[in-house]
Image (cartoon, rainbow, N blue to C red; front, side, top):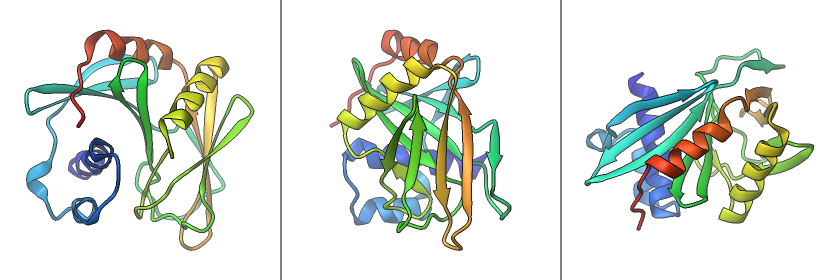
Length: 186
């Protein structure tokens, strides 16, 4: 659980700044233990959990899900998960912890509603969308699909993981964040 919270905080720190710099990489390697977030489970919507992160007198919200099925991968791996972070009215950031060190040459592909999106993998286990336009398109496709989405990723040994995630409860989680979450990103 501690490692999960540290990894989650890493994602939040990166998105809070909107870019990756040397400090983000230091944080991602777990050296700045004092930056651990205060996360509290706010509500569960079918397969999605919404967490509040309370810091600096603000409440930030994150909808988090783990895959319900993985195909093709047989290696050692920690639990992968996807995060949709609320950034303000109808604005979100999508990020992923793959559970292993990804091969940055192959890319990470999120597929929903018969469309594929490439996620950026600039840190060893972490990937995220390239722009707010891509975030919006992915979320719109997820809501239209409403069944599931998949993420294909490759580790540094060129092993493939195909993870399947449920979309049950996503629309309700997004509605909850719109009504109940405040955020103050710089």
